[in-house]
Amino acid sequence: MKIKYFKLLLLALPLIFISCSDDDDENNIVVAPDTYEFTRDGASTVSFSGQTARLNMADEIYSALNTNTFTKAQLLEMFNEGTGFSDASLNSSGKQVGSKTAAGCSHGPLATTKARYTSMLEDFADNVIPAWTATAANGQAGLLTDSARSINVNANGWEVDQTFIKGIIGGMCVDQIVNNYLDACQLDSGTRRADNDNGVLTSGKNYTDMEHKWDEGFGYLYGQEADATRADLGTSPTGNGTTLNKYFKKINDSNEPGLASTVYDAFKLGRAAIVAGNYDVRDAQATIIKVNLSKVVGYKAIDYLESYMSKKAATPADAVHALSEGYGFILSLMFTNDGTGSPYFSEAEVNSMLSKLSNFWTVQDSDLTQMVNDIKGRFNF
Image 1 (cartoon, one colour):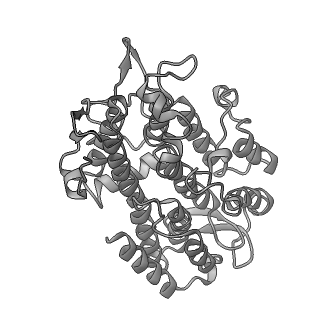
Image 2 (cartoon, rainbow, N blue to C red):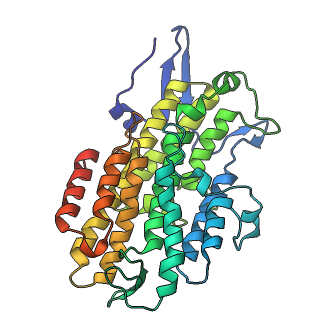
Image 3 (spheres, rainbow, N blue to C red):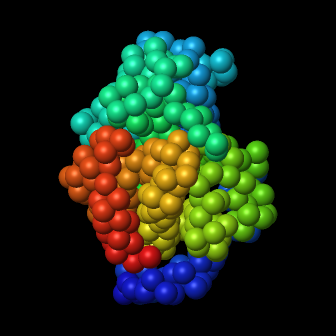
């Protein structure tokens, strides 16, 4: 017998699950630890150093996009090759941001979408940097200033550091969690389920492949925590870094209090279920994580579009800053997951919205209002 768990039960009882085996001859009880700590023979089985490296790389690329001192070759090297960083440990890590952008295994590589990210880096180097102190105007990259802030924008009015890094939140962080490492296409690939059942460890490591894949998903959210086992991490995320954790904290502190506990508890229980070999519980927790991390993208897309419309008359530069963030979160919508394996908005739907945001100088409030309403309706906000 297999028990079907309703979503309400999943959210109400995140720490303990009891499920029956297919043969209905024994109970398989899964109990989550208080913190994200798992050991074998007295040694930790948790590892996500590669995710920490990529998050730190994203931070450095973002910093580079706030200066006029990097060449196109340098920016593309950091993104595609994973070298050229000030942190020598990143250069020798063998990791790249580009290889994990728009690359979730459940949908396969999205080459056209990935090209958007490299195009932003190229545009910044080719057009924004040479016009660093020029006056920005429609069709002219340059400096846009008001009483609230000064920003450097491209010819279409985008603040590229914001469109890029907010797009990375969805295109790398969310996508790698909800469409890759917490999906069956990774967790159950090849012999991973049988190997996990039989305690077959990854060569030279203290974990099974399945355990490690789950941990890698965990790392794209918590990888910049000084201590990912902090007892209060589930209630008070730090918001470290410039990517997903930062906005995860913002949503937990505003739009949806308790989101952090829901996600952290699901990560812990799902990992415990892998140790116990209970894949129904594992998949139920993965669904909780997919739905709730996707909400972060939806909420922030709405917040920034509405912020632009409220600010544009008094502080146009500050408004464009918000719209640039909104653009990145709209781009990120195609990487969400509604728990059934489908994004809340398809790549085609997102591209349609982005086409209406192609030129910030001529963007229409009516289009933005429609986007806000569509996102609210799709996420049931």
